[in-house]
Length: 435
Ligand code: FDA
Ligand code: NAD
Image (cartoon, rainbow, N blue to C red; front, side):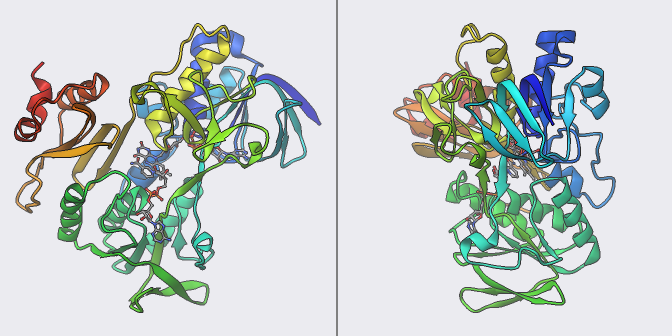
């Protein structure tokens, strides 16, 4: 069987949902019958960040349909009915197994051939498995990864099966830190193990990391740094012990693995130009074949703010904005849309803490505020600016107000000059609030 659509979005995650809304906003009823979304997942696009936060709450957790896209941007909630009402073909539970860019066709797992005039690739990323690093045990009943709602359901089930038990969290990045906080909220004892010197190694400075590690420690979390889990002992299908490289044995009722992600580019290897682990696109999010656009985790695009340097981001704000931009560009192929001008923005929320980061963590890190953790302080406020060639290149702020976040974003966006680093450290956010 084969079907043809003018526009096909491959992938049904964050970027797909935001792209669909943008299509409808720009094309209105004309979208009907033109657009098809193909997703391996069984549910309509949803806000993935909810999976490591609200979804894992011990009581009253977030559940679909409440966090379908585009709830995360306080925009319309796109349930399956919404796609139907707008004549958008939502092919759920359907994996694309091969793509032919020259012929403009996709082959699905059910043997259907879908042809397109314009394709938007939004296949996101997949978790790295322990096996890729020489480990084993991923299939055990109580080993959890977290990428999609099926994973999140398993994590909830496993957490609930071992109240008061021991969890080993492998990896001290976003998944490790956010899941550790959720496990604590579920009254599970947590040990985080990772090879780096401090948590969130890709973003945090050692000083920033120290605050969060002390905060987690005050909640009962144990950090084991500078080593790795070398093997997992399994009995009756379940992990019972994690054995560390240094020989230590940790009892485990469950394991959560968050050791990074890889962009889902495999369908297009050898057919589209690749860069930095993603599909290389131009400022219109258009790939090396002009009928293909790529957005979200899978796209490596030029960042004007960084002098046009190509970057790939694995964060939700990027997926949303790139998706909207690609749709605008695809509907106006004359180039009238202009090139994307993206200000990188990442955030996280754990326990009662909440931080935002804008820009690039390149250059000298200048810390401000009270970075010393105190159990007595209920609303810590501190951060760091990265100063590169005398200008603000990046900014991190914990506990800011909306105005303060806006001010640091603005300072990064316009590369505010920093004549005196000591003054920046002394004044912190006040330095950028005073315009
Ligand atoms: P996304 O992964 O959302 O969607 C990809 C879709 O493509 C999936 O539906 C997948 O099944 C489908 N697909 C892939 N291959 C396919 C194939 N061959 N055939 C059919 N379908 C296919 N970011 C942030 O800034 N703040 C945060 O708090 C968080 N929190 C967070 C929590 C968790 C648990 C995760 C996993 C990730 C985050 N992120 C985040 C990152 C953020 O969610 C991520 O950057 C976006 O989801 C990327 O959106 P995409 O649409 O590119 O991929
Ligand atoms: P990550 O890259 O943030 O962290 C990986 C961690 O695993 C690091 O601490 C690293 O030192 C460690 N590690 C690497 N190899 C290891 C090994 N062999 N053994 C033990 N530890 C190892 O990746 P992640 O936390 O898995 O996140 C996956 C994806 O989800 C990323 O795309 C991330 O951006 C996204 N995500 C983002 C957010 C957010 O933005 N708030 C939240 C959750 C997930």
